[in-house]
Length: 346
Image (cartoon, one colour):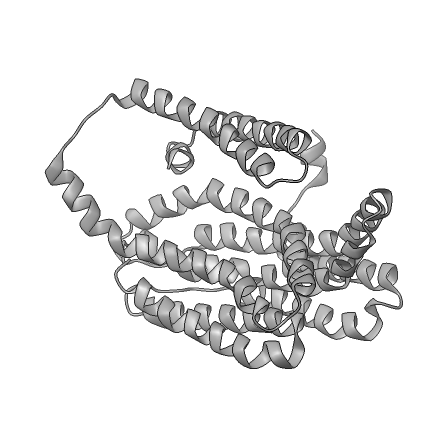
């Protein structure tokens, strides 16, 4: 809640230092917990709890100093009435993101569940970067929509999301190229060769993030115009589609079945959310920058990785980077023509 408040207040420096402190404490106390309790879960769990307790107390004190303590039952009741659809939506979002491991355990050996989980956690670095960029401009998007009489996307709003798509394409290319090298070195150094089985799945999991900006784009109007009530019903359909796909595909394709089900879930999510809001919010989309560019990158990975990815990983993964850069140069060719290097140097 405090992170959302700091983003809305545009207190970037406070947001940065608080999260850096949180990261440092979690890392420090988790490592300490593992050192003192090497064979027990109480080490990492207790360390994380201690770290969050410190930052949580700091947030409570800082919030009290800024706002004091107030209780307005009527306002609280209105808040619950407004927020309960959003609460149900967030719970379903959490469920949608984590239940796949539980379902996998019913069909696959636990070792394969661990390999998939490690792959997802490694590629989560893209998630952190995208969330950081998105949260930095999202309050501005809300402000733009709030001032509109006719609710719609504008050139300025599209620039934020197109920029996020460009960042996503670059991050996916970089992560596919560098993460296998880093993991191979770390696992060899730590003599944990079993974790090397996660490397071939990194490109396929990374494809998922190429769909993330499009999802951000179609979910934005629901928050911008405070149209939260239908979201829980929409996500019943979305989650049901993903579960159905997993029940069919996991027995047939194993880990790949889980990944394909995730792609299907994203496709259903984007489609349902778009058609659910288009009568109340107008989309003016640059189809190439928003839709075609990330899908072309995803298609290249999907074709090249099974074909040559294992035999020539450096060459193929380097090609992804070059293709991503070429794609962005083509997409932003008009903007690049207007850039004056002499003015930038001055």
